[in-house]
Amino acid sequence: MAEFELSALSRQCLNRRIAQQETVERHINAWFENRNQSKNSVSWQFKTKDARIKLRSLYLSIQG
Image (tube, rainbow, N blue to C red):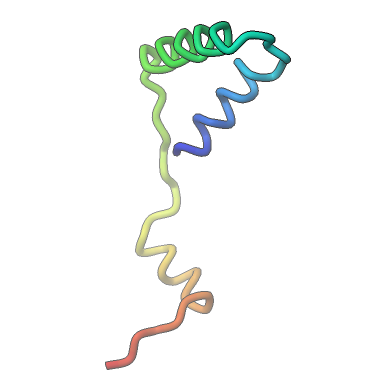
């Protein structure tokens, strides 16, 4: 989820040159305020049980 937010920040706020650090901080703070108020969420479609089945071959199994 963090990667989604950083990608959105990059596309919506940091996609241009900004000369002063204070201006960047103001833009980011405003973006975060707006983003937090919108209460976006992620709908996870890939459940843990499904991942264990589908990705079984990628992980070593622990044998006791």
